[in-house]
Each structure stands twice: as C-alpha cells, then as structure tokens.
Image (cartoon, rainbow, N blue to C red; front, side):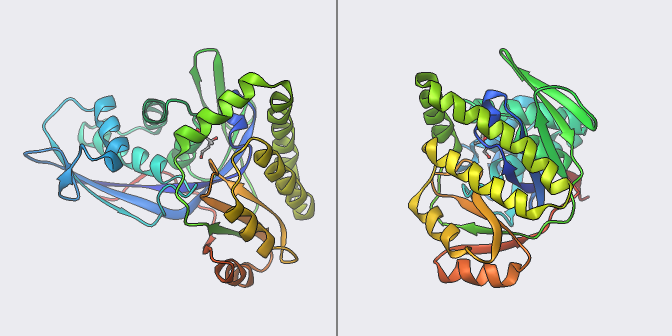
Length: 308
Ligand code: MEV
C-alpha cells in the first residue's frame, strides 16, 4: 500500500490567458488531497466503481502510467470540488504519485508531464499550470520563455510553457467559494471560441499576460496596493472573457474596504474568488455573511509527497 498527497492551488494572475501561452502566476495552498492505493481484485475508488464520472481523473491517470493488476484507491480531500482550487489537479497528481511509487518510479517531472496529459485528455484543452503547481508546490510562474528558477517545460502542438519556481512573500489570501460548481473544460472551450472570433478578445488575453508580469513584480516587491489593483483589472478582463458570475461579484463586493484587491480564481463560471488582505479573519466573516464559504489559506511550499 502507498499513500501520496498533493496540494490544491490558487491562480493569482493569468488563468485562461495561460492556455494561449501567456504568463500566469499560481501558488500551492495548505489544503490537500490524500490518495491511498493498493493492489486489489477490481479497480475501485472509496469502494465504488472507477467508471463513475466523478473518478475520471483517476481513471485517466491509470491509463497514462499503469499496466498492472487492479488497484483500489481511497481518497480523502480537504478541497472543495469544481471550485477553482485545483481539486482535479491534486487528485490527478496524487494518483500518479501513488501509481508511480507502486512501480518504483516516483518522480516529480514524470508526475507533472503525465498530469498535464491527463488534464488534456479529460478537459479537452488545458495549460500545465494546475498540475505543475500541485506537483512542485510553492509559487509557480508560467512564462513564454526560460528564466531563473526554471523547473521544466511542457508543450502541446505549437505551444510551449516554461514552468518556474517563483519565490513570493507570505500572502494573506482569503478564498470565497460561491458554491456554484463549474467544470473547467467547457469554460476553457468557450473562451477558445471567443478568442478565435475576435481581435478585441485576443487583446484581452495579451493584456492579462502583461498584468501577470506586473502583478508578480508587485508581489515580490511587497507592493500589495499595486498587486491588488492589478487583481481587480485581471478580474474585469476575465469578466470580458465571459467567465464571470453574479455570485462572484457579490462576494467580491463584500470585500470592499477590507482588501487590496480581489478576483475570481481558476476557471470561473461560479467557483471561487480570492482577496488579498491584511485582515483575513474579518474578511472571511464578510464572505460568509454574503453567502460564500470562506477559506483562509496559507501558501504551501510543499508539493506532491509520499506519506507512507
Ligand atoms: C484552471 O484552474 C486554469 C485555466 O487557465 C485552465 C488551464 O490553465 O488549464 C482556466
């Protein structure tokens, strides 16, 4: 039996634009998925058939790296599902970690590479940001070319993503989950359609890339006022890409006066928002009062890890 765990993530800047090759910045958070795996007489998860739709990331991870006897998985998660916090990536990464360890070939680069393939297969389109963040932990900058802190690069068709370790200061972030579940695949697909049909929308994508670079610099310099303004701008552009939702606006409005800035995080369409603040507990209360489920999250330097 092996047990492997992997963290969720928050995208601070650049979601959606990163699928088109623009830069993006994310962090791993201290909410994890734990996956136990042992050889068995049938492939199953928590005693249920692996063919259930909700286990498709696990099934696809098996198809990617496993050629042996059936495996029974037991999964526990601290992450809300389909809420923009990287629960699918953490499930994928912890499954791959467990399966590779059972074969004596646990290795973060293989996990990140195969994790990206699994997300592509399940979602139809994706960037490697979620799976690399869950694999490596800490701060991750996805960029168009190699720079300091390069971890690995991953490509698909004519696109190549350079994934970097990106040191960031401690950040007080509060997540507000709207409770509206939204799947990443269809949202990414809709943005692709929009981008294909409009020069203006392609301009929004490039602008998000510029905001990401400025936001990264602001965070690294500790200029949280500027970082917050850039988060607000990034959020408006995400709304222009059609991935906003009234429930996100409600939670974001509730943060006014208590945060440097706020934006949706992840694929949008519901899911979660994040706010950068000096007063996380007070802000969490406001989010709860506005009908959201708050999480005061800490930045986690640890990525995928074997537990036993
Ligand atoms: C989802 O967490 C992030 C997106 O940019 C999709 C992706 O990068 O794969 C929306």
